[in-house]
Structure formats: structure tokens, C-alpha cells
Length: 281
Ligand SMILES: Nc1ncnc2c1ncn2[C@@H]1O[C@H](COP(=O)(O)OP(=O)(O)OP(=O)(O)O)[C@@H](O)[C@H]1O
Ligand SMILES: [Mg+2]
Image (cartoon, helix red, strand yellow):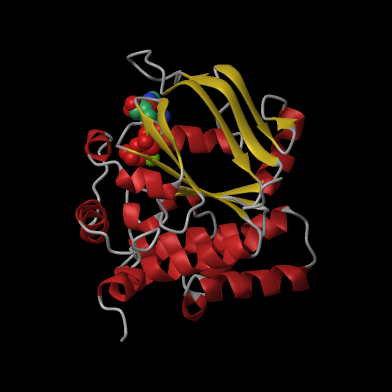
């Protein structure tokens, strides 16, 4: 993340109450947050904490009940900005079924770039690259209804990649993926981040946030914690309180860090921990 990075998305004291919400309770309350250009931001929190509601504000699917959401300087409140906001922020929704619009895999992946009015050759090359990255090229001619849940999730990712938007918001994009698919998607996200994209990554899995620049924890529709990944992983009781569980490697790293003088890595990757625990002589 660049230190002088400009703001991509900003929530200013946002409160959101679903019109259909029987309780009338706010799904987001007084949330202020800046997403900076080039950062990979992890958004964490237990079920119902407001993560998807926040995500839907970032591409103008929801408009704050109170407060404002500004994307690349444009208020999402102004209908005239919606197309530009959605071109700048592409979303991978939590439920990929909601996102599939095409009847055939490559048609579906082409939907975003077609809406952007790009020339056919550019659409074709973007679709091919996106399907390749998402591991779906072999299925490009298949009807979308024949895809498995995980494949639908990959297709949603491919659709977002094909947009080539500067900012991607991914709402639990690995939930239905197998371990290989999860690792592949994280590798794609790292490459996008290295290439300067801004990423908002919603997840429950702490092992997925190791390469993020910053983490935000939501609880009950409010921002409960905000900071670097390392200090977040060092929280113990608080993580449990927020419904987040430290994976064994993180727990080991934390315990060893507290109990021994070992030179442990700043973040607990498997390779880093092996190097720290079994240094080559
Ligand atoms: N369409 C809706 N209508 C009414 N209430 C809703 C709607 N969608 C979400 N809510 C409520 O808003 C709150 C936040 O929901 P949200 O989906 O943002 O949570 P989340 O953090 O994404 O949860 P999860 O981890 O389960 O995906 C919850 O109390 C939920 O019941
Ligand atoms: Mg959600």
C-alpha cells in the first residue's frame, strides 16, 4: 500500500436500516471507514455483523439511511454516479447464484465488459484471461446451470476480474472453494494487489488475511477494531468474542511468541514458522 495513497471508498458515519427489516434495527450504525488506493483490506466479523451490508454500499447497491458513501469522489446517493461507481468497484457477492446472469459460462463472464461497451476483441481477451485465472477455461462453453457451487463462485470471480475495475470487493469469495481453489484465489488476489488493485476482502478465515495491509472487524453493525494484521492476530479473547477463531498456526505463533525468545516471523506463514523453528545450520 502506498503511504500517500488516495481514498478509493469512504463511508462517512453511515447508518443503514433495511426497509424490510422487521426489527427496525440498524444493520450498520455510525460506520466511518476509508479504503485507500492499492490497499488490501480485510473485513471481518461474525454472522450478521454487517459485512455484506457494508460491501453493498461500496458499489451503490445500498444507499445509506444516514451518512454518505463516497467512491472515487462520487456520492453513491446521486443516481447519475451509479454507472461510474459500479465500473470502478466490481463485486463478488457472497451467494454466486445472485450474480450469474448468462446462460453459458463465457457469456456470463463477458457481461460486465459488454456493459462497459468495450470492443469485441477486448471483451474476448478479458474473458479468456479471467476464466483462465479462475480455473474455468475448460468449462467456457458449458451452461451455467451445470456448474457446481464452487464453480459458480469461480465464475463470479471471473466476471469481476473481466471488469478490470481498479477496486474489487469480494464477499467471502472462498466460502465454497476447495483448499486448492482457495489457495489459487488467494494467489490471484496477491497478484492483483501487487499490480496495484484495491481489494476489500470479506472473510471469516484469519489464515486468509495474512497478506492484507489492514483489517477491520465489525460487530453488531459497528466497527469494533481497526488496525494491522499482526496486532489483530495477537488478540486472543477479543477474536473469540468477535466470532473469529485463530487457526492452529496462528495460535502456535502467538504462544511461542509469548513463551520463548525465538525470532518468529512478523506474520505466521507456514514457511516462516518452519524457518524460525528449524533454522538451517
Ligand atoms: N435483505 C435484508 N433485509 C432485512 N434485513 C437484512 C437483510 N440483509 C441482511 N439483513 C440484516 O442485517 C444484518 C447484517 O447482515 P449482513 O448480511 O450484512 O451480515 P454479514 O456480516 O454479511 O453476515 P454473514 O457472515 O452471515 O454473511 C443482520 O442482522 C441481517 O439479519
Ligand atoms: Mg455476508
